[in-house]
Length: 226
Image (cartoon, rainbow, N blue to C red; front, side, top):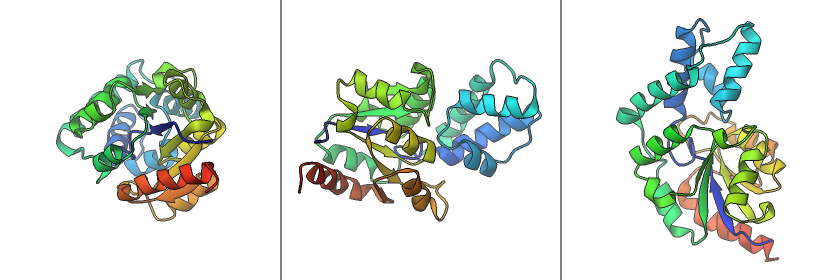
């Protein structure tokens, strides 16, 4: 099937934010009696919504965390964004070079997504087609968010191409019946990350956004039989 929609994850694909987000997440959890480093947050929760990460921690410690935990994490993240956030290098040019409808499907909250894209100078390139895990019952690795984004954009799942940097994201896109490209060029990606993305189901992997327009053309050509 030809490609009719490009679905971008946000953190780690559009904005180089995962290291910043993990630092904020670790700071808040540690403050509430769950000592954890930003590196450990990255390993455990990359691509997972804050709501689902909270459930995992609460199940482990056997008690509830504060009701406003997500708001505290978002406030800490946005504070770091203002001084430290940068777009993924070359992503704006890649977006402009792809002549297909595009949207964002992110595990972040709407405020975090908006602020991150705005700080990175990307919001106007993608608005208003921006969707958050807060709009669906289950976040990644469930397929719900990708299916929701496709429905909102009026495109069938098999005609969607997803750009993801996390194993939960790749898993969710695969479960939605979509083609997935795994990006491993963000500042948070350790050695071997490309292999992990391929093992999760990424059709192709890449680490430089200048490669993306040609990869999209390649996927389209393969879909059309050459």
